[in-house]
Length: 303
Image (cartoon, rainbow, N blue to C red; front, side, top):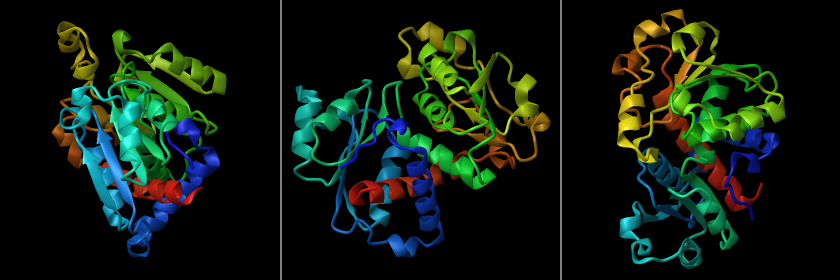
């Protein structure tokens, strides 16, 4: 039995196998319509979610399986004080696999220690979001046909952005990756992320201007400034509009450069960018369903 708590739980070879399987599902969805027949996925979402929860549910349904769970801690026994460990011990009696989102870093680790079924981390605080990273890798791979030798710009909230931290952990393992970290000083990438880049021998630069680096990017990964991670409302208001992508700023971009975003956006990407040929964030959300289908198949059947 395997869990997915951190993207680094998967080897490069296993990620490659998942990308291949997701491609097969995209090409021949009918072949996988019964891949999880009579299996049940429990979605335990202690924190609000739209794309991640619905994509997990859609993935399981498209595999012929069933879904149960909750979309808010208020609608679960957590509101009565039940521990994560007890919730997992109970839910595993009813489900074959669990996807869990929690506002506290490390909660999915606790869940996995007490689970007799596979546990998937669907996001824990500002720490990790491995299935979003798989969606990101799927998007990049389908656009470029490779994950090596790319220049990736990460823009916005790099301090609290768990999707950014997971993507760095994944892309650092592919040769020739260069990161451009674009953020205000107050929201720069934490030391453990930049230390990870150095240990992996992954090159990076930190800048304060999006326009200055636009011509060199293959991928521009935008993130929102996350209000829910701030302790001080004044700091959030001051920083929330630090970087806003609009069509004129894309004029200097390479023709093949793609704009990604884990969503939801607030105003960090102008809606006019939606129709720009560089935009890929809605396709990215769709790929999230297919890669989660592949992951569910692999975790239920074994790698």
